[in-house]
Image: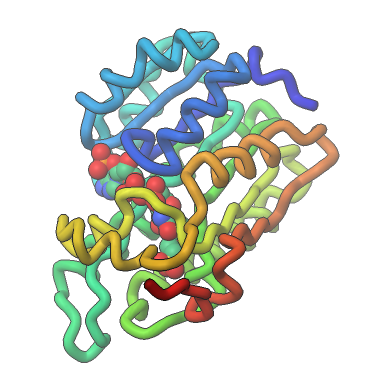
Length: 258
Ligand code: NDP
Ligand code: 8X3
């Protein structure tokens, strides 16, 4: 098992949900953390807890992954001790709306495509060359069941996650022989701020997503990420679909009544 104490782990979208849970999981293993998200105040508020949990060191950065020059410059200007990134958890992402495609909001489409596809690419492009030069590293994309299945109103979000799946597969081929591994962790329903964001802050609608069923918790996904990140160098967890017991497919969810 890889020793996380010697590793630098860069997590995008670390201010909430799966990204924040990954930060805590890697901190417990003693890794040094680079955490990015737009809400810098939240990252700063996490810092002391992460150090207490065992993180070797923590560097936080306010970053919008849609801003390519900002992504590049953040990675290039990392303090010396964080510069050699061993594990990238490329997690920042969101859904907006569940409109039928022919009734969709263009702003929602732009935001999802710019964040989930272009933002993920900008981060990979900034980080992976260093891994290739060092002949080691791991890129972990947080995909989704929406990367292999579609559901009503999921159109553009599902398209972005299908793109993430293609990018994971393509990157794995491009990196063959470099020693850099590519992992896709693909969850089903996870109880985070994701559904609130999908409904533009409507918490009541957001909670309805999980009505009568038990979703995954962010920590469940973080454990899968940690598992992938700690395999021996010969092992590449290419894809992992992680579902709640109450979910069999994107649209097949068991809900209890009453
Ligand atoms: P949350 O809304 O809880 O977290 C999303 C994170 O992404 C936040 O930290 C947010 O930080 C960050 N983020 C969003 N946009 C940007 C941006 N432009 N630049 C930088 N950071 C950004 O949702 P989850 O934890 O659930 O989502 C994490 C990932 O998991 C996403 O890629 C999502 O698609 C995927 N996923 C989620 C599932 C679920 O059911 N919850 C299931 C399958 C996959 P901030 O707002 O501070 O910038
Ligand atoms: C998030 C899971 O089913 O809402 O990717 O698309 S789902």
